[in-house]
Length: 96
Image (cartoon, rainbow, N blue to C red; front, side):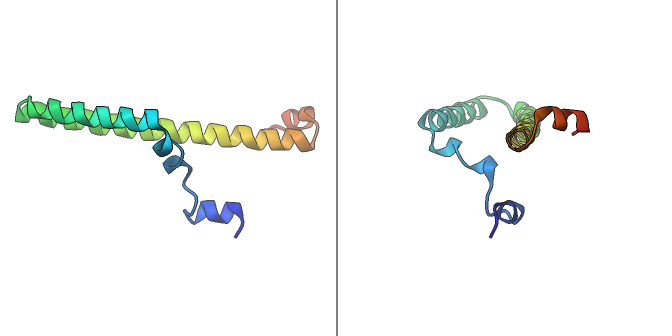
């Protein structure tokens, strides 16, 4: 199967690879969860609802930012490949 097909069918998921094997990232996620649990133990039910809404909005914003970074990196990679195989001025002048 070709790389594009693997990506299309979800066999390659760039967003889920990389960070999970980084010890610094893993430690920060663990610390975040410990602090989150500690916070939720010490706030009222009304504050918990507000916090959960905040947390959901933050998660959604993070997802959007991750996609934008992925898409930007992908486009840069395509431009690098195109530049390697042709004259850059041909690409820029063609309106890509």
